[in-house]
Image (tube, rainbow over all chains, first blue to last red; front, side, top):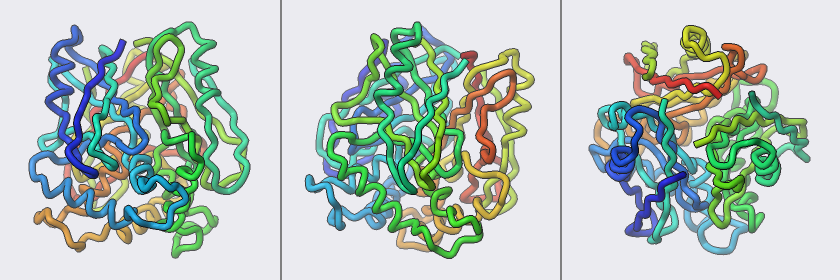
Length: 132
Length: 132
Length: 132
C-alpha cells in the first residue's frame, strides 16, 4: 500500500515545501513511530531536505544549480530540459524521514521540498510508511 | 538476507540500466508489495534513477559531471580516479524503490542505473527487500 | 525508537568518519541482520559513504565542492553559510546501510562520513534499525 501526494508546481524551477502534507499523511496512518519513505516518479523533479525558514536558502541552491548546469548548455537531449534531468540525479529522487508520535523528526530549520526543475506541472510523490 | 547483483561495466564511464535485473530479483522473492533497497559497495561507482528512454539524457549527465569534475584536475589522491570518488558522493551509493504486485513503481520514463565512474570492472549491487 | 549519535566536528569543513560508532549502536541492538537508517537533522551538514583508507579522497571531495560552491559567492542568504546549505542538498541528509551478523556490509574501502560544512559544532545523527 502507498499514498500519493499531488503537487502543482508554480513555475519552471520551484522548490515546494511539502512538510505539512507529509505529516498529514503520517497522522492519518495507524503508525505512531517509524520511517516515512518518499519517492518521486519523475525524471526532471527531485526531493531534498533543507532550510524552510529563510527562503533565500532555497534561492541560493537554485541559483548555484543553474549556474553549474545552465538551461542552454551544449546538450545531446533535444527537449530543452537536459538541465532538469541532470539536476534531478544530483538532488535525488527519494528521501527518508523518521517520525515519533506522529511528528516528523526534523531539525529546527529543516523542511522537505519537492524540487521542480521543469515545471509548471502536476507532480506526484509516492509515500510508504513502516513502523520502526 | 540479501541478494547480490553482479554487473560487468563496459568502459571507464558508463551508466548501466539494471531495472530489469532488479525486477527479476523482486519477482523471485515471496514479497508482493514493499520497498527494495539497493546498496553499492564501491567508492567509484554509484546509483541513480533517471530517464532510460532517450540515451542522450544519460550522456548529458555524464558530460556535465565530467565538465564540473574533470579526470585530470589538481587532486591529492594519486590513483588517477579522484574524479570518480567525487562523482560517487554526489550521485549516491544507495537507492530505494517501491513495488506493488511484484512491479517496481517507476515513473513513465524512469530506469535504475548503476553509475560506473572508474571502469571497466565487475561491480556488485546488494539488495534487500521488505514487505510494506 | 531511535538512537542519537553526537559528534563534535573539529572545524568549518570536515568529514568525520562515524563508521565505528554506527557499528557500536548496531552491536548493542537486538537485531542481527537488517537495515540501518541514518538521518542528519541539520541543514549545513550531511552524510556520505566514500573511501576511508586514503584521506586524500575526502580532501579532494571537499576541494572540488568548495571550488564549485565557494564560501564567498553572490548569495541571497546573509548568514555567511549559503555554501554549506547548498553542499548539504547535493551530498544528502540521510543514508542507508545493510548489516549481517552485526557487521555493516561495507565495500573494502567504504566508510560512513558525517559531512560538516559549517562547523565546528556539536552535531547529531539519528539512527533507526530494522530487521530484514
